[in-house]
Length: 112
Image 1 (cartoon, rainbow, N blue to C red):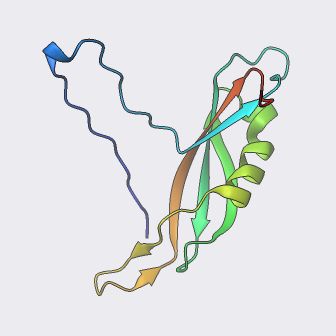
Image 2: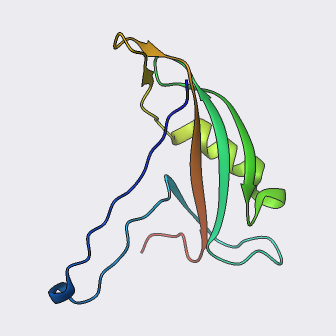
């Protein structure tokens, strides 16, 4: 099974500044990014999710920083991302292939 997720936004002209919905699943604040990686950097990863919603496998597959941040993205996904399991035609939870987007933003991560 595969899972498709999408965001929808409506533009309301009188509302002033419209902020588009985020298509990022996991936001990570880091002190600094590796050289030549612009902030924010996004890594997309394919994940295998079991019927109980646990990430069994994570493989970074594309993004502007995959070479240097792919492994870190997968570590964070497996530690803190809690996807919904897919369901088959009978409604039973089932194993699935999903895509997760991780955004790394450089800046001060200390709490004041």
